[in-house]
Length: 72
Image (cartoon, rainbow, N blue to C red):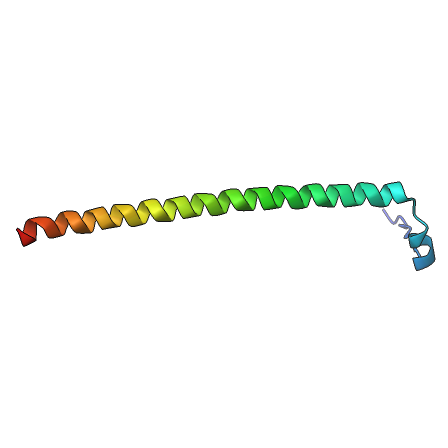
């Protein structure tokens, strides 16, 4: 049960010597994730705007429908 876990210490100089393909892969993944988040965020914003406009139209039509019989 008592197992020693090893921790690898990576110094700055060693970190900067990493192969560029590892960095490129990481950046590609990050860019892909960022694009997906931006895409979903735009979908949510469009849905909310559509819902707000439909709600305001429905409320306006209900208010106008109530006012017309009373005014006549």
